[in-house]
Image 1: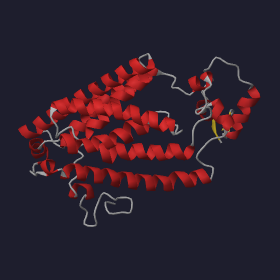
Image 2: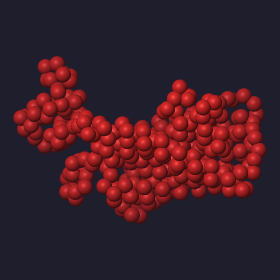
Image 3: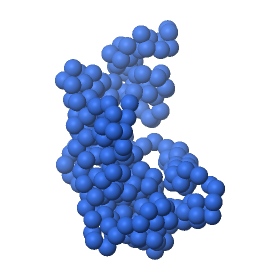
Image 4: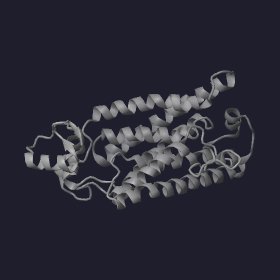
Length: 309
């Protein structure tokens, strides 16, 4: 329902609340990425850090990292390609010279922002980490894509480069901040989607131009010149954060209190791939059969049936 209690972005008459209040979010930096990013942050806080995340034992920290950078690279490549459909497709039609021009601009700004962000993240990784951390840099590409999603149709090409570079800085800062606060976000979903989504929404109020807004939306206003556009974007961001934080908390924290949000320590150490999906143990260590059987029983796994009870 457009007017249900979980539809705060619509007014009682069915009109979109954010649009009626002047928020520009062309392809969803706010309503898509901020929503998922802040929901993920609340979930990460509720479930707590993985065993060993807050320690400094090198072999334990190594086990908490991803296992297949090639698949990560493939996934980001697919996402980056799909982003053109996501952003360009938000023009909603391909007919007419104006619509084609807008879609073309969207494709260019999307490409430049992503390239600028992954470039800036790679430089940071090489200078401060001493290497090109592949997964870290791949997230840099996603940070640029998220950052440009709201403004891709209403900014100039040079602005998309700046938005991408700043998006990289926002991603890095947010990743360092949540780790410092003890929040375990394995995929850095909040830094990429929540923090960069917020920046992307605010960037509209800084870099959008009157002529591009007129071309993309078909109406003219002076909100950029008066500073009202940035105010509208900030209010929209606060509305999204408040709604997502409240509704996600109502979901995650009751599940935590009921003990339904997290597996046992034994299952966690063994790995959900083994305990829940029967995937053979891949690490080069010997596992005591008794511990494996104990973890499988805790997770409700039955060898004979090859599935959960």
